[in-house]
Amino acid sequence: MPDPRIWPIPNVEDTHRTVTNASTLIRSARGGRVDCEFVNDSDYDIWLARGNAAVVGDGIYLVAKGGSYTIGLHNLWLGAVNAIHNEGEQVDANVTISEGYKL
Image (cartoon, rainbow, N blue to C red; front, side, top):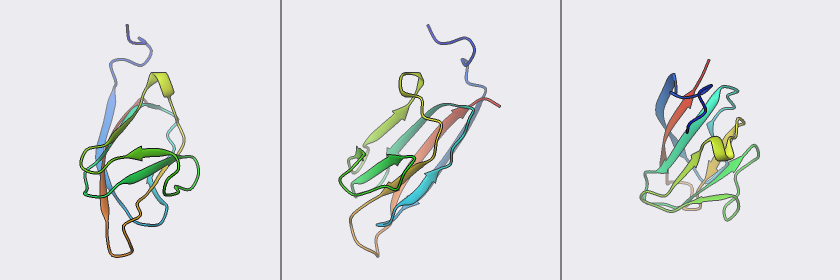
């Protein structure tokens, strides 16, 4: 059964971020976070890092065209999330983000 102090989730922010071949902040820290879904909406592999700079080959791997990662009650992370890809300077990758939070 969901935690009644959090569920139902009172607020949601849906957005996207562009990822480059340099570590990029894609989600700021949020003390009221209750869940967050990241989906790789690009043709390029992406790596996520929680709280530190993203590095190709390290951290959380999102495969191209749909790889995803969920922050939830089982692995709640309230800090910043960074991302990176390794496809070269002229390429941008897209990550869609849906974050639930309480005030």
